[in-house]
Amino acid sequence: MPVLAFSSPKGGVGKTTLTANVAVALHQLGWGVLVIDFDVQNSLRLHFGMALDDERGYVAFADEPEEWPNLAMPTNSGVFFLPYGQVTEEQRLRFERHLTDEPDYLMRGLGSILERPDWVVLADLPPGPVPALRGLDRIGATHVAVLLADATSLSLLPLIERGHFYGARRPLVVLNQVDPRRQLSRSVTDFVSGRIPDHLIGEIYRDEAVAEAIGWQRSVFEQAPASVGARDIKHLAEVLSSRLKQEARNSAPLPPAIEAHR
Image (cartoon, rainbow, N blue to C red; front, top):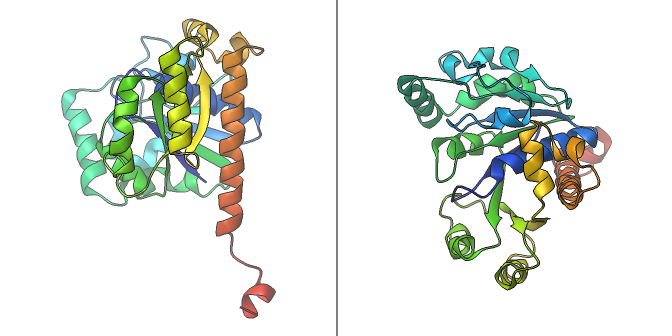
């Protein structure tokens, strides 16, 4: 099973909302999908209809990662979800120590899920160089950096290119909330698309329908399926789906008859 890790060097870029909607779009494309919240804010649940007073989550079971698959919750969208949960500071620190100190930690928790090639795991990470980034590296995650088409995000692009935040593996990049009415937004989008054409995989136009869907605790595809936001996120999911299938073909073992003649 492939793993997509959505993160950003800075907060407030709409990363969690994008992760949730891409998860639904990938499921609509035929993938089985599990979404995991790595952020102590525990806000990914707001996109999947989880009650605000529901404190369940997998981080409380930090010492028992083998239990995580049993904690995955089905949602109305067809996506399965592992919420971070309401935890104490001690529980949070214990979880992060496991991520940092144990190379096989996430494999212990997700190994049975990762064996399914027709499924994809989406991870929603807090901003910055957090322990989960390195833990996800160890299970071969593809990193997706979410940036805004603004001056602050543009200033972070050289750091990403030099290996800050993501190490040697350069992430795929998505520009979120692009506003074609604003000159700066257009200029930043043009610059980034020219600077990293092979890594920029999506431009999501600013659309209030996406924000409205959060209020109803559902995806933009349920709230406004004909909206610009739905169109752009669906296209991003199609690009990711195509890349994942190509990577699976490239990594698949050769048939014995072909391997024998190599």
